[in-house]
Image (cartoon, rainbow, N blue to C red; front, side):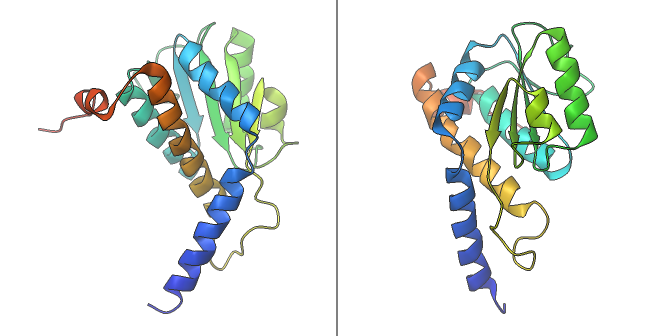
Length: 181
């Protein structure tokens, strides 16, 4: 496959740079919020939503009460809950509306975004910014690829921290893993 190796190398370097751009104090705050909140609600649209669902699975496997906003069985967001919203642009209308509604209800709203100055960051209590500016070329990382992949890696880097704090190991998580029969 022509160019595969060079594309992979560029993508891996870009993901590492973008994921590392997240402020560690904000990541620590997110870990605290995940563990202190009564329930965790996650929302994202498109591929950002898929990244959110991916992270939600890991949180459920650690024993947290997690819901994806928009699913038919998702309960209403309430006070003492965390609403985590993922949006590269920070301008996605449904993401901004979800943040505004959740804050009005009294939920703490945290976002992962590529835009420090976007409407989503403004509507959130806590904003984690993954800086993609000047990184990537649409020919090897089209649209929001770097943001989405970096967000996934950032979330995966939080998982072992949460596992330690919860005293949870892989065996515990495996017992909560979905079993398809």
